[in-house]
Length: 92
Image 1 (cartoon, one colour):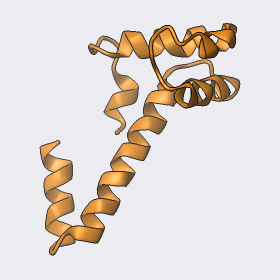
Image 2 (cartoon, helix red, strand yellow; image 1 turned 90 degrees about the vertical axis):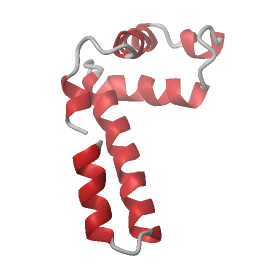
Image 3 (tube, rainbow, N blue to C red; image 1 turned 135 degrees about the vertical axis):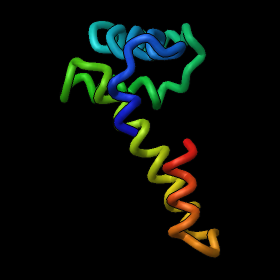
């Protein structure tokens, strides 16, 4: 989760950074639909820009939600939660 906020040159990081910065200065970018991305996600990025201008906040919150969802699924459906969480965090 913390690795996602430290990356600079991963494949999709540049696109996320561009979208995050573009939405801040151009709210009409949300309604144009140029990148065929859900408007809700662009609105989230727009409001996160008021908290921080750094795209690392968006990457961190996205990773937090994804890891939280994995942990909840593992907790609900695993017979051995400790081993499943250990494997999840060590293998991913």
